[in-house]
Image (cartoon, rainbow, N blue to C red; front, top):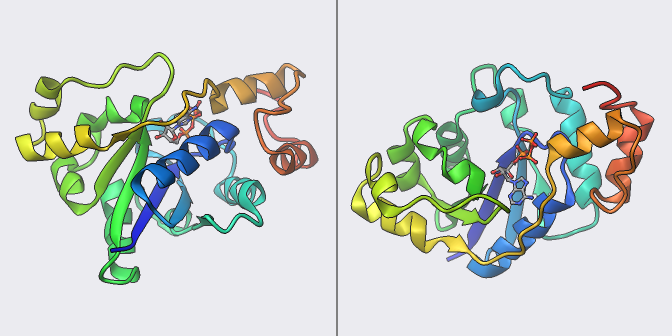
Length: 205
Ligand code: ATP
């Protein structure tokens, strides 16, 4: 069965942390495609002011241009309602070949907030949640997961925490660096740095 790894986020901007862990997770689960899905207005970050969705899509496209492992999909940015992951997974279920297994990638900081996600139980059944580590964030324990998931779902989530490099890069830090006039070289692909520069992004926090 073909596995597709969907990777949603605000990607404001996309950085090498995202790219390194996505490639590592794809290798770990033997996925032959990673789809980056920039969000419109993420339900968890509704008060934050994000770069426009079209610009974040552009940044993602610049980041992975020429890499056959990655696709960028702007479906979430075209939705009018909130981008609940469950709805996105259902959309991909409708458009992907029947036999493909849909996996959804999150960093550990997102997994520990899974209880706040829209219909977390349905989501845990609708896709395979795959998690990569993030520096400084401990995995949730089984008891915590079982407070909002079934035992089988908790087992499956824990079994899909995959080995990947721990990369201490965040979009928050990158925005602060740009605002402070510091370099973001090596933190983002050169093509992403060029878009940030040309569009004057993140000059103020
Ligand atoms: P911000 O600093 O603005 O919160 P971010 O760097 O966390 O942004 P997002 O676009 O919010 O990036 O993240 C999308 C997904 O990627 C989330 O599931 C997050 O956990 C994961 N992620 C982001 N950076 C890393 C990293 N360095 N290592 C592992 N996972 C990461």
